[in-house]
Image (tube, rainbow over all chains, first blue to last red; front, side, top):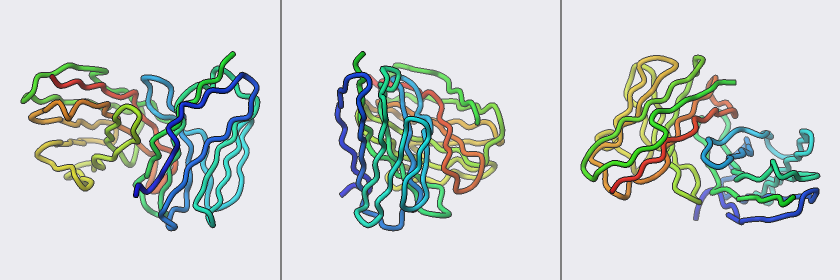
Length: 111
Length: 115
């Protein structure tokens, strides 16, 4: 079993839709949860991160963590064609440097 | 934030040869990492590049195959040795500004094809 599971998609939505991206994980020791965005032929870039459980909002993006279910989500409101990219979840244990990445979900927002 | 560049951006190599990938950061970073990414797959950590000492390798990766250098806080190299077609992948370097930080800044990657 992989430590982090993520549906690879692709996910295709019309412009303006609300997008939900999800990851599940098996290691209950994970405490930091990150979302990275990767455009084609580029390296991943950090979108946002949360610590432990709860929600965090940044503009059109909301990250949610449910530690009891070992489930994290990223919501994108009013999606734009420029949001078309692969979204990777990542997690780590407190005080450790190693990240565990999901395989990424490819999102296509159609104008 | 840190800006990371990699050279070469892509290469096509023959089986049995070696390729060295360079990673340059525009500011000092505490930690540097090397990853491999297959199309549609997650990033797999190869090793942590330690300044002035031997890299720390993840399970399944060995120094003889992937020697790494990090002479200072802004530069690192990864060599893919005695290449085979199975080494065809995208190789990414990253850096973080401190220990146990959530921000990793990634380079654009080196796309390697081994024939």
